[in-house]
Image (cartoon, rainbow, N blue to C red; front, side, top):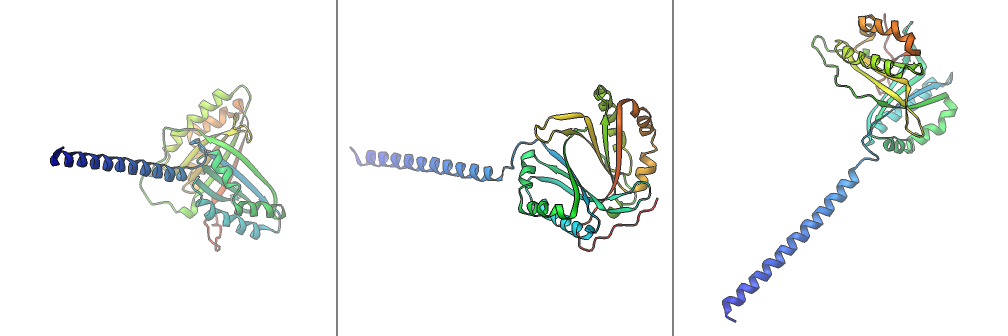
Length: 277
């Protein structure tokens, strides 16, 4: 064998070894990337879950319960599966008086599994361990948000004061046999309401069974946010399409429960605003 032939064979073998090394490195890199990616995946699927928690506080425990509940908010916001977690205090729709004994948590989670993980967090366990001491009851319900082809948009003018933001929750109990008609009528409200200048968000949801996750079309939830109380009370509630809905609602609904809420700001110096009609 000539010297040149020997070097060509040796060079070919070296190239083959280098190629094998590169392929091995690429395989190792691919495995590492997949492991990192898998560690970042949230629990469950992409079926977003809405949770509504209404907390009724015992008389005399208002301050203690409020501070304990406020502590949950920044901790929960750090959870990777948390999409939204907002705390509200109740407002009487007639007198506009703040009720420090009633709170609402409106939550959106990436999946049911993410919410289940949340319920196992140590700060949640601490809260539920002490809740019987300070709470009359805690009402937990789960929902699935209906998809919408429209969204509210800011249409100029003075920027709204976030401290005056008014929230409303409407729970609609539909008469059996009228599910389709009620659903169509209520969904027709969505794009019209999204056009209102004072609307921040207006979302509808169907109730889910806590154990089976089966939808219950007889119970529908609306969660709404408005620039302030007046734009909801005057502009929205007196709109022609909403008045039409309330005129026909007794035909398809057994009950519509409206409750008012103020979104809370998370500081120890939190003070509810003084509402005016």
